[in-house]
Amino acid sequence: MRQADPRFAAWLLDETGIDAESLGANALARAVGARAAVAFEVQADQHPAATRKDWTSGAALPEWAYEAYWQRLTSTPAERQALIDALVVPETWFFREREAFAALARLGAKRLAAQPGDVLRVLSAPCSSGEEPYSAAMALLDAGLAHEQFAIDAIDISAQSIAAAARGVYGRNAFRGDGLAFRERYFEATPDGWRIAATVRRAVTFERANLFDWLAPHPVRYDFIFCRNVLIYFDRASQDRAIDLLCARLTAGGMIFVGPAETGLMMRHEMVSAHIPLAFGFRAPEPGATADHHPASPAAVPPALTPLPVTPLPVLAAAAAAPVFGSAPVFAPLATPLAAAARAPAPPRGSLRPLHGAPAPRAAAVVNAHAAPCQSAGSTPEAALADARRLADAGALDEAERLAAQAAQALAQNPDTWYLLGLIADAQGRAAVALAHYRKAIYLEPSHYEALTHLAALLEVQGDAEGARRLMRRAQRAAQDTGQRGEPDAGGSHA
Image (cartoon, rainbow, N blue to C red; front, side, top):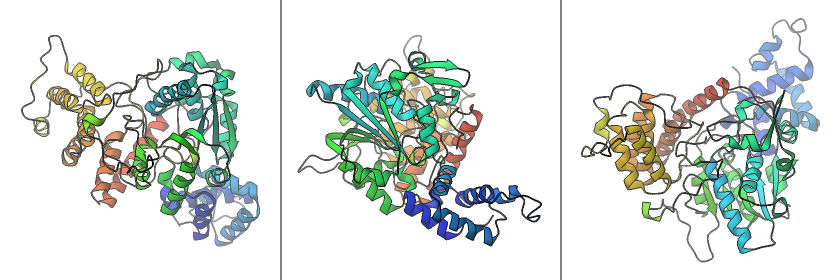
């Protein structure tokens, strides 16, 4: 398959900040071919050697068509938007990475209590097809905030995504995991899908906009900004510019929520982790203070947030991969290493999975050889593992490791056992042990998304960029397989 004309890659970088290579091999060439086929209404009888199917794959796009489409792209604003829409495909769901929304609700309510009469301002950029800002609105409403106490702005570069968000009708794939009680409170079932209630819809203001163009002159400062999993698609200069613009829009003491693969980027800009487990929140350093570039010790990690009634906080919760400007292909090459204490999983797994078989003879060798079996009368390895997850969320990493190691003696064939042990070792700064555990999880389940992404992050830290890229490609395929098995959203297709 031929590569796209380099002019298109340069245009995409200038227009959006997106590095074409981060979208996957030949993604731009395929999108250009598809748009050219539409623009010129290619028919097989007109071009026998290049059928419409060939053009949409980018494989047989002739030189004249590249040139003609380039002229059309650079002279027609509607075509520029159409190509962007062809490159960004929605793949998101409600309460994705739930810990961030729990943190928003708890800290937002605390902020208003300290400053009564203020309006809490939240930005979702990018907002994709609306699931993220609507989730923020529901979290704040569930926390007892009235409409007049908060305002949510949401932007996305994709006109299709903004239209879907404004429509507010979602398919089953927008509701993932076990905590779906919010759907009963805030949605109405219709023949086309679940329609979000007006009480949530009126809390969010949507606008189609380019992140860079919109932020630079924007006069509003925000208490909380969600900008998750978009920076990994930018080149270095665009990453730095975006973070600077976002930080300039924060209020004093405000917080930015990013994706797990972007925590290193924030630390590069001397942002300080809020140390809220799995929320990936960052603040600007206090005047005179030095940003914390190292993972917190277990004792420094605060207790887990008290979950909202509809948003429990499991360790194995939401996905790390997200859209470009809210609605893009599932993953890009890893741009920056994850912070050891701030790594998160992806496609929702709900509860831990059951035992996959008898213990493997070599499995326990990776665990502390002196770990005692579960001793509580009536307890089970599954219950011990669930307790370990809760302790890990609360920052009690030593005790969490002890219980997980006990459970591993009976659940040695369960990949989530090893993933949790890896996560704990990772947060403790024991990279070699974390690597061994993540590899074991992948050995047991080659498409284990969370273990793939976390192992990729560790390899990146150790300088193995190519190994990290290979793992991220595997994670991308795993995420795509998960999305394809789901039912398409009413508002758009999956990555």
